[in-house]
Length: 168
Image 1 (tube, one colour):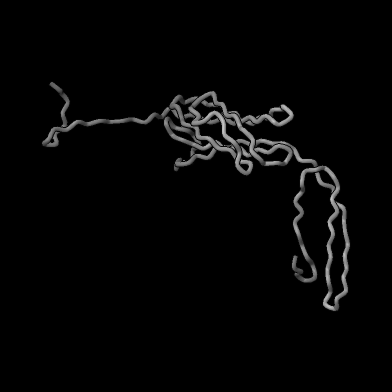
Image 2 (cartoon, helix red, strand yellow):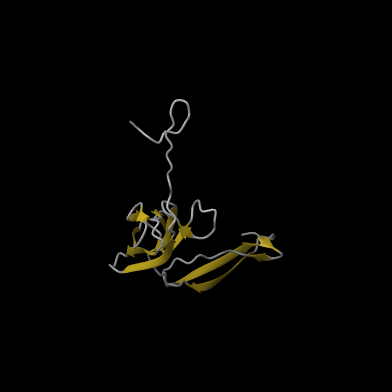
């Protein structure tokens, strides 16, 4: 680290071990004198966690309501005792449709899409991971479904461009 007004600053990122760590600072002065000092920092034990959120991809209304056939991304941030290695996250929902029932974390994040069902009901979405010791941890959120459903209008036209309503 470089000094600013005689102070050098570094960030210490815990390793989740729950053990003490020795941090040593050393400096060589312009005359060649070497100085050092050390402190002991107690690392906190890492906790396993899971956090589920929803990202409304194309919703420009800002209402956070999932219309029929509208997609949103469910994002889970998970770790096991601070490690963000490959964890399998199982997803379930009481409404809408999940594009996948599970996803593996990449750098601690797993995502799947949910598609609105047009029911107008609230759906509970759950994300769950099973830790290496068999313990499961979960998080859930409520997604409000809209009763709006997509409509399709088909108009058949003849060669002259007039709409045709009767077929022989």
